[in-house]
Image: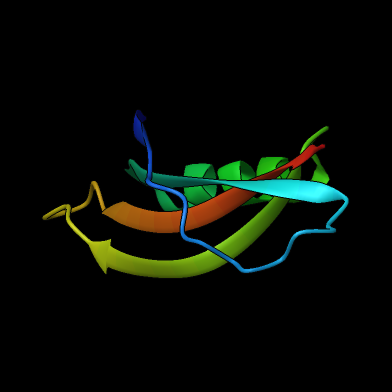
Length: 80
């Protein structure tokens, strides 16, 4: 499994009285389908609040390996 994570520039929301601060990240996971599914389950059930704002998924492997490249744009929600 290969994982690349980069913090993105925050976009102005115009909201001043929110409970959570959005911290944007862009990430890419390259692995088998089963590992992609386990990674997404980990995001969904993990200890942090995560909002997926965009995604794309492309098959990158050839032959019997069958790797997927999953690109996600997410916001981690941090309590202010």
